Length: 216
Image 1 (tube, rainbow, N blue to C red):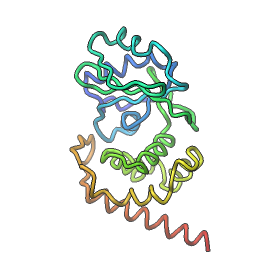
Image 2 (cartoon, one colour):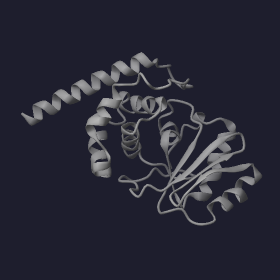
Image 3 (tube, helix red, strand yellow):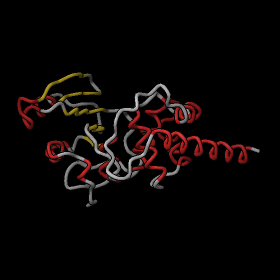
Image 4 (cartoon, rainbow, N blue to C red):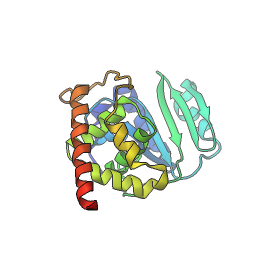
């Protein structure tokens, strides 16, 4: 079993995480929380479970049985269920049809997506315009060498095909002026937005120059 950075969750969210083991047969934990639990870079607040198949009937009823009356449904379709639990903790079950391309990370509770899959998911999210915390997550993944920008792009192209645009992703990676840079509670040294912007500009420049050399 993998040692997790449980300090990335407050006490209330830690209890919710423990209860999510009861959904381990349905899917795996993804999103920023799955990244934070593995690398311990920031506090995380929401839970995203990527399911193995379209959502089963009775999922919301099961949630109410486990978490009690403090569960509120905010959105539901055949492929997505959004709820809030207790103190406005967002929990999402989502079926995207792709599934993991790497072995999942085994835990005592619900399994986690591997960092490679998590990074490519974030790349797809940024192509559709993500949030500031998505940039923070990718920054730490690349800066601390958990993944490389080149491998993130290659994996996203292999997993998502035409749904992922390399060109758009690289453009979005270096343009954050229209994002609301809300406060991040870092668990290590705080990183300011300008530092992240400069890092991505350097990364994209190096990647682009390398691609030009490969193509000539």
